[in-house]
Image (cartoon, rainbow, N blue to C red; front, side, top):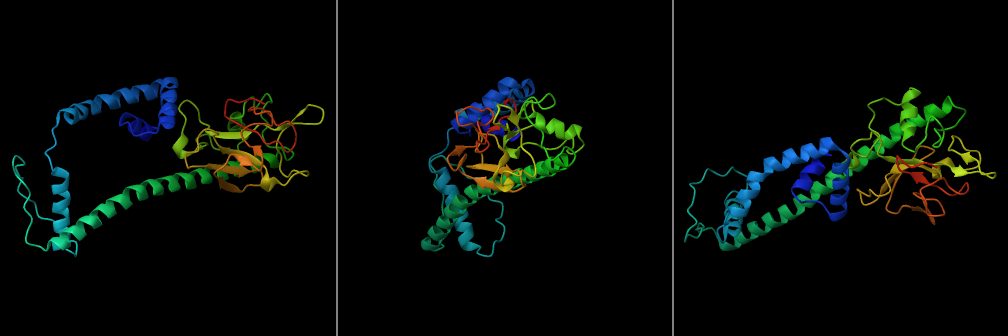
Length: 289
């Protein structure tokens, strides 16, 4: 969450992400205090930024200086300390190095920066996705251990011990299958005020209206194709969702649908238990069947 607060303070978030962070700040006094402290530390920089008059041609001159150094030092020698220049009525003077070499080096510098920044962001996203998938695998290990001691049943949302979807983690912890300090949330979607950041199966309505929860193995379904846990429905922080199946496989999908079935709502479009066996419905931590 701290990195999201920094991005928020620097106004670097998309509108949807900004709204999400604002909601979390409103719900978490500790996050609000952190943001206030962060803004107070950034205030002097904002004043300097607003009052600073950037000399004309400074960016081009800086790029030109870097380009000249790259052209003159192809083997990567460190640049010597330069004497500060006065930028009033002054223009940078380049050496007699062939102008074509400097232009080529400048282009390379532009390309390098253009490739580096998106690459860092992509690497960060991939690392978060991998960590998220690892968290889901650890949750399934706990779920499988729980089913071994509970007649093949996973924790069932809507029962006294698991009243909401997010309570399944507490039930796993009580049964000794999951550590109390386990990370039951995606690294990019840590929610303040709660230890759970994944959607979990709300089960489905049986033939006589009874609530039926997930189990392992399920004699009437292919457990490797039945979602039981996933990134939160509104997250899509990896441009998609990591989905854990009852059989233990984790797959990444760019669509919240399994065929024509929205995995985050039942056939009536509600975040409630499915209306039949094939109606998958994963609820957010506070959802009830």
